[in-house]
Image (cartoon, rainbow, N blue to C red):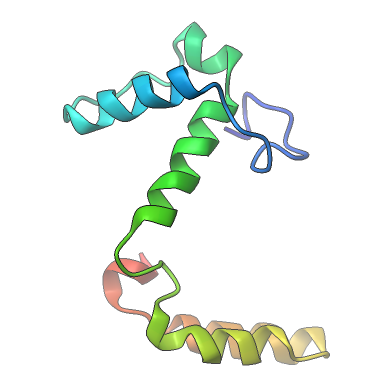
Length: 100
């Protein structure tokens, strides 16, 4: 996505719905979609949109409901160095698949 798109705002802008659905179908059919096809390169936002949709639809978010308050407390720390240390500590508590 970052290699083929304008990075500023690329994750904020939505792709064309039909392209997002086409890409979703390719993934769901267990094929490995060719993200270098013109249709996806011309609408790189469909790739980032599908990625965001995948994360939204997970039964338990990547940063897990169980660790939500710890992450919220960590990002609220004012000192940047201390904030990063705390975030890394909380990340280590994630279940292995979420951490990967």
